[in-house]
Length: 127
Image (cartoon, rainbow, N blue to C red; front, side, top):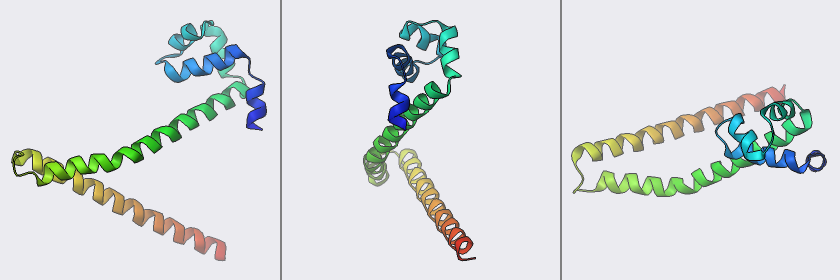
């Protein structure tokens, strides 16, 4: 179905979606796509255009999430290095330690919340 909606878009509409993904405002996107702003707003109300835009936004968000996940390892290594460095000022080491603990606690809270929700959902399906 998603492929069929993409096939229904014109080259100008595809260009407009790309411009929306790369522009700060709809005005900038309309200029980049070489269309009127009025036309862009009409397309934004079109269900097929909107569905393809949402799909494109979702793909971009997934890619961003993967890149953030990949970089997390390196960010933690930097924090750990600063935290354990005897040459770093105490204020910087303390800031790194706070960052480490904050992230650790958030991760624990999220894991706890996920486990509780999973248990509630399992009970709901047992009934």
